Amino acid sequence: MDTSAVEPPVRLINWKLAADAAARLGSAGPKLNTADREDVVADLRRHADASVAHVHRITGLEAARDLRDSQVLIVDRASWARANTHSFEALLDPALRRLGEKKGSRLSEPTVALSGVLTGAEMGAVLAFLSSKVLGQYDPFSGLLRPAASGGGRLMLVAPNIVEVERELGVEPADFRLWVCLHEQTHRVQFAAAPWLRDHLRDQISRLAEGLVETTDGLGERLMDVAREALGTRDAAGEERTSRSGDGRRQEGSPGLLAVLKDPGDQAVLSHLTAVMSLLEGHANVVMDAVDASIVPTVRTIRQRFNRRGENRSALEKWVRRLLGLDAKMRQYADGQKFVQRVVDRVGMERFNVIWERPEHLPTERELHHPDEWIGRMGLAPAPAR
Image (tube, rainbow, N blue to C red; front, side, top):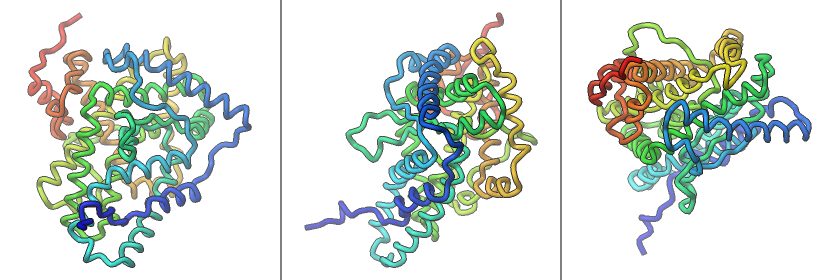
């Protein structure tokens, strides 16, 4: 009997070790008694529900009218890290299966085992760091390991981090929680408005990962770079937005990936993923900035204090952020916000929403920095003056 078609993927990443290491290395966050924890969970659920109507009003996307495509989960840090290891595994499974088909016989069992331990431990350390920073995340890939699951993903709100930051900033908890939920629910709406987007992103990520399988040594490390590029630092409101200097033409993908990718096709895929992730974050930031004191009474104070958080980082945290490329990510997302705001200012939100209709409407990385070129390609006329 030929079993090659069902050969399991090469275990270059020990996913269980990654999840366990993240839980072991990370801290639990602020201490809350049982009653306070229950209050925080209930309050976050209320704000998550309330924010949907605001996203609908601001974006005009009908997908926001009745969201039933995905779960809303209130999680702790270890649960967030474990959930991400599951999504990483689902994303990278096609590339690892391809590796098993092509090179499995040339990879010794000790080599695979060692790679799995080292890469799993490294991923665990990365997730432990990120798990203390992320306020929330919409994960569209959560159902990929469960074939019977619905097409939707899951929205995770990391309760201890939200509590920690609202205390650190000294802001009104109810306002801050609604502000965070507005951003996160915008991501949920994006994928509901563009039901093709999850599979499109998965295909692009698989292509990038498979290209690395073909072209590079150190496969475990490189495949983890792909996972981080696609999901690991896409943490929405969890970090402050950073202004960009210069003319906006610089390409800033994952430094590890840019150094390895030689094939023009693979470089094009990375450029496309960079543009799409920047678009998603930029659009969510524009929605957040559209709220006023009638929705979040202390929104001005929240914005000011949140955007100043980076000034108080320790030297160690700044070094880790540079190592993981998080600051470059924030600059990319600021580029995405400028793109969305420019387009909306010129043609209005209703015309902007054609971006969610099909993959061909997504901006290129060049168009991200030259939004008028995207407007021209879409044939969008400026919005009438009011």
